[in-house]
Amino acid sequence: MKKYVISGGKPLNGEVSLSGGKNAVVGIIPAAVLVKGVCVIENVPAINDVADLVDIMKKMGADVRYLDEKTLRIDSTNVVSYVADYDAVRKLRASYYLIGALLGRFGHARVGLPGGCDFVERPIDYHIKGFEALGAIVDIKHGIVVADAEKLTGTSMNLDFPSVGATVNIMLAAVLAEGLTVIENAGKEPHIVDIANFLNAMGAQIKGAGTDVIKIKGVAELHGGHYEIIPDQIEAGTFMAAAAAAGGRVILRNVIPKHLESISAKIEESGAKVEEFDDYLIVSRDADSPIKNLNIKTLPYPGFPTDMQSQMAALLSRAGGTSIITETIFSHRFKYVDELRRMGAKMTVDGNICVIEGVDKLTGASVRACDLRTGVTLVIAALIAEGITEISDVRYIERGYENIVDKLRSLGADIKVVNDDTPAVTETKIS
Ligand code: EPZ
Image (cartoon, rainbow, N blue to C red; front, side, top):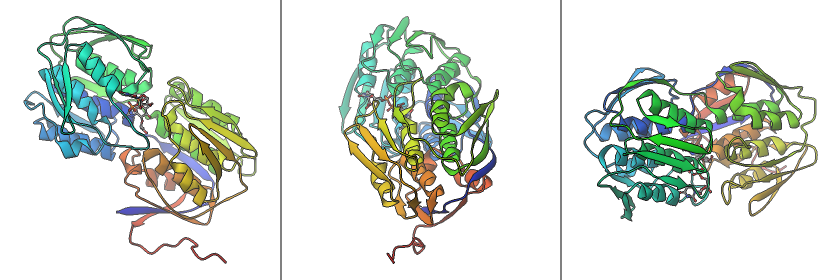
């Protein structure tokens, strides 16, 4: 097990190229199960979720190999099993996409319930409702989703909530179904569009991805092809929040500014400057200038993304005045507050609202990541804290952030990776 040791108080300066989208690639890899042919997928981030999905795909009989460090070649022609490895599936949330993909390909799926970030209870009832609307019989037995369908037939459905996962999973089950499927109140996130674009590149007929009505015309089969993953919207937002918090001037390459509009607006409202160009942007803040307080309400895309609210809390912990974060996507997503309090943050949580009283300084402490975004939030807090912070359970961070230590170090951060059993260096003695 590893931990990060960060000595805070240094501005970030320089440039970093961001990676392919985690929430796009974790949908595209399972989607390749639907393709009887070779899919070549470029700009694949080297993150643990990808490694876990590759492992699951190989166990089902897919031929998966890297053509270079960022290009995956997947041939699912010889996949005959519709059973996914139970323990491997529990390692991440997005393994649930295998249900839709296997159901779409074989008319059967046996996939354990997903694992992944457990900051709150995360049901998959919308997914199951969608599969049943297409004609599948779905049950959960011994922790395994058992889905079977004589035939999948296109139909119209209206999601109770614009769920990212349910939108993608229903799309996966519908691409080879007979007839037209219409998903109303669909999610519009960039990664949903990316997964739809991948499927269309392989011969699917999906229209309307990125709007709240997606139409999928079933086709007989999908063929192989090439596809390049979009840049990671949340990785970009995370580095924007880090730059705004630490001060300095950071150039972020391999971004799509359009996907970052709600994040850029809040970063600028906090007192930093955001300059946008076609595929890169610059975030800067004079380290002596104040961080301004602001309010955030998370919403489905194009609103402010829930996956960015904790990173903003780290930034706002040092803002002058009071900031309020309202989480509307999940019933609760403030597990990081206890850890930030160890560093001197003044935050109170009441249900889905977090009130932040800005403080003059944070101090380094030994803290623990409890999920992906909490982990990276602690990194941002450590970058701006006085003294040394140790973050353990960094495996959560490495599920979704490629080479985050190297990237931050290249911007001037004092961060190193040590074994978890290395003696603590934070000031545990109170003078
Ligand atoms: C996806 O999760 C992302 N994960 C999450 O990112 C992200 O926070 C979330 O979308 C919202 O944008 C991946 O893409 C792998 P939802 P997902 O279905 O699909 C409820 C990260 O940090 N719901 O849009 O699980 C659900 O509980 C991760 O990268 C049901 O009630 O999110 C939540 O309150 C964390 N029943 C709301 O809907 C269902 O069947 C939105 O969830 C499905 C969801």
